Length: 209
Length: 380
Image (cartoon, rainbow over all chains, first blue to last red; front, side, top):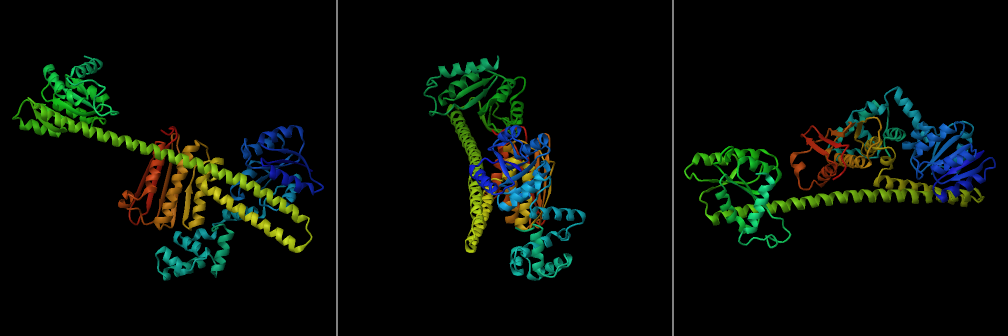
């Protein structure tokens, strides 16, 4: 498989080259330092997968993806970015990227992503996949936490952040009794039995950090 | 006589004055204060000019109410000496009209009258804004010292205005310098440090692949984990300094993101009504975004709210932002407290772009902040 690497940082390009050199089925056929070079190289070199940095000097990442997709509909663009995927991945995919990886991804993940998109597939990380699935689910019915009142939501968030009833009461200027009542109601509304369950839910739904 | 000729006439009068001469006039570096003398009788005007010439200020004269009005339209006077009895528009009417204009609404007016016994006219005079009354024939020392007081007052307020202006410009400069610096540092940290870490991680992975020894592999694994968490930290610092979204995707996306972050960080529910994403002037976007952040900081710190509603609107000529919470509500005395520098900062930021921040609150009904910034204007 012919791979094009584009990143404005030599360290990253070198790392990528080393990483891909180990794989016998992958060949790096070109390296670019910016969007303009990607466009120029693409005219001469028939790559199959381009591994692009999202944020290179010159052309904006999304524009570059769109342009490549338009000119070479048969080739796959894989974005390898410093930016967290929850903010950028969906946009990149919408613009026509076949996959989105952050630079924290393990090398094996990148290699398998390249193989997958070269075959015409799409690649998203398990985390993003789960998030997209949750969003689909949420669109069908109201997610459980949306059934809570504003105050209950806040108390739920505090419980999920590991705060005790006493701490919550102090912070919200409420009596511990009132907080306990809120807690009981929250658990009933969300169909749960324990704080641990609440925490698990809040983390899964990205309600807390 | 035309305005120009009038002024020229005055200049002449100033030069023939006994101790005249512009070079030595007044304190060095200070522009002369303008004084307007209005009388229909050339003789009286001449007498007034002679009397006041020793003050070494810029004397301007008008022989009718109309002329006085015209001059007051274009000049800021330290004081106006106004004859009450004039043909055409009389002194009272002239004063009323001068006071009605925004530019001259607080210009001090001293009426000159020959009729000592006209008490009723005196009341009329104070009603239309006279600050003093002098009877003709005027006592030279009284006239001079009264006018001198107003000249001094004018000087002082002028200086106050100047220093206010300077402070405002300084604040504006500091805001923009800080913003530039933040953007610069954020970029450096994110790009340079981030990329080096990425490279480092790749090297470690490469090394790991060649290792057979289990304890060594465990080491490289933990190195990778450390690099990952450092990347996270770098990203957090960079975003905290300046969210890259603002530059990449624009204000609408950045506000939406910030609202989500806020909810995640505070547990206060945040509902945002946002327009379709559009890109516009980055400085206006930055200003609006920073004001928005400041509003949220205040909500988290003071409001005790459980909910925040945000609405961002994009008009053809302006952007509007409304943020309301259901907290305790800001009190009037808090709004005006000297310490509320955060609020002052928002005002100043908005003002730089000809915008406006309005804050209102009522106890128990939360606080509402409305921000509008015109899109057309560039900073002063």
